[in-house]
Image (cartoon, rainbow, N blue to C red; front, side, top):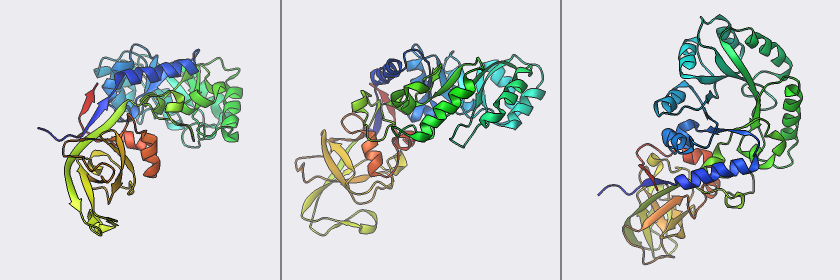
Length: 358
């Protein structure tokens, strides 16, 4: 016997969600974003599952790019944070990894690197995110420098949304207009749309789209859930009851004793906790599924366990299944209750949780 906590991965749901990308942006090429270990689902598994139906992959760094090459992935791989030192450039060239160029130090490195097989690079333009990228006014000079570099064979340009999850947002519309105005006469391939852009801002689709969270079945939009967008959860995080205890009215539950039983009641214990990636700050009354039915958590989240109010399921017993999110319980709902984002919950599922493909 082994600890019952595991993450079930649905390959059919992953492929379905990519089909939704194609449906919304039928003329754009797709760069599937698989950084942060494929948003917690497993970098190599996600990439192999999508490899026959996506045009490129996006990762954060050279380490993740090399993992994809080691997994047999042959599509273009974009490094969304670019390269960190010039020492990486020969390996990027050898492995056909495409770095984002977003600051002057990278331009200087590309201008002085010894001869190597030329690179494809992506120029990051800061249209309003104010995190990485060149201001639009200096982009023509940046492009001139890159075109004169023997290390560069092809240049594309991209930007990134700051507020695309909000409908009718003036900042997002301004970003679209500014990027389109800059790109109009450059004759370069362009990319702007993330998951929210794909679903809500069709003018942002351009040549390449970069789906991330929607691939994994979570909604990127405010006040629109995944089911309404026909997105299917790829990960179902599940465990089981390892104890059911009869408790008396007034009994404190868990660390600190902050939560007390309002009446005599059964309290269940499930084998999952913040050491597995379940959010430690999830408050009492966060929903889980026991035998497919909702019950609330009680008490504080422990490293390896959570406690559950089983008054609505007095027949629940040791071994009964407990789902933390996924099929039947949207990860966005759990994230909202915990005061965080679905992105964080998925990415934080730890390596000690076995991934099981279904």
